[in-house]
Length: 317
Ligand code: BLA
Image 1 (tube, rainbow, N blue to C red):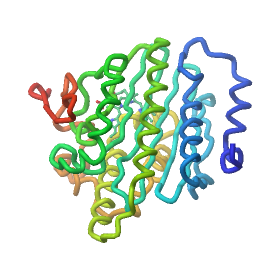
Image 2 (spheres, rainbow, N blue to C red; image 1 turned 90 degrees about the vertical axis):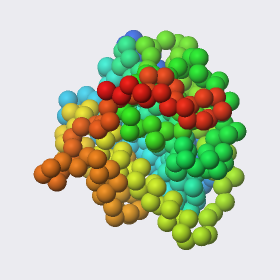
Image 3 (cartoon, protein in one colour; image 1 turned 120 degrees about the horizontal axis):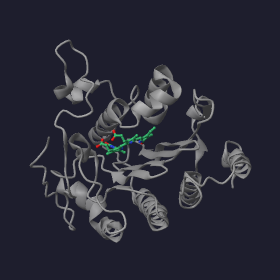
């Protein structure tokens, strides 16, 4: 691997993995989510020049308050990539991957998003090229990025089926090819997940290769605003918060969310959460702590195989 990687963490991953007794509890395909990260970094490096992000110095390896759970953070940037970052959490009983790639605002590229939460008997998975702009109302944006990718989502529809109801607000951040699934670990599904990750990542890289820098200032601003809104949502309402707080304490968790995972909140825009999502406004002026105002919905996949949004949220509760 190029020195940019070995200089940071990959050699310590190796050592750590060799030291560790093979876990019988966890069956993650390709050994562990480290291999997913490794794949993505190598694939990126084949197509662009990755350099470590300035964030790397502050956010790298951390041991949780229990003295056992390891958190590993990596971050890079590239000519078209504002921030590529990953968080990998590993303990005897769980494994988490939060891997995202945020384009620079000069590109209206989707945001690559892989969020996997795994325990001995449960996997919660979101894998997507999160759209920067609204794919329900903006047909041309949807066609530009997703029309050719619809077969990808069909390829995995059987092994990684729709995971059932979810926070209704989340659906606007997902694309017609999103893989949202829950399953009990099995070799077939673990393999399918690794294969899906590779396919989706290669698809994203291909979009990156083809993307042309936007010169129009108002379009750049529009991209900036859209990414800022996305970051603002996730930094406040992502489902992983509770666990992060439990592992490293509230202050560190907040710091990690705002300044590492969803870094850009303080640079890409100045609006606040309630400006974007006023329905969370509480009478005392604070943000409603609920994850969802609308409730959970979308029992089944709300897009058809052509990528049209077909809803089915009739029974939100
Ligand atoms: C559950 N994670 C979920 C769920 C979704 C996501 C949809 C199901 C619960 C729900 O409907 O909210 C993921 N939601 C996303 C993603 C987006 C979104 C990726 O809106 C993007 C826009 N998950 C993590 C990390 C942890 C984690 C880092 O990514 C832990 C540190 C844990 N996710 C986690 C846990 C659950 C979960 C514990 C189950 C708890 C719950 O359902 O609230």
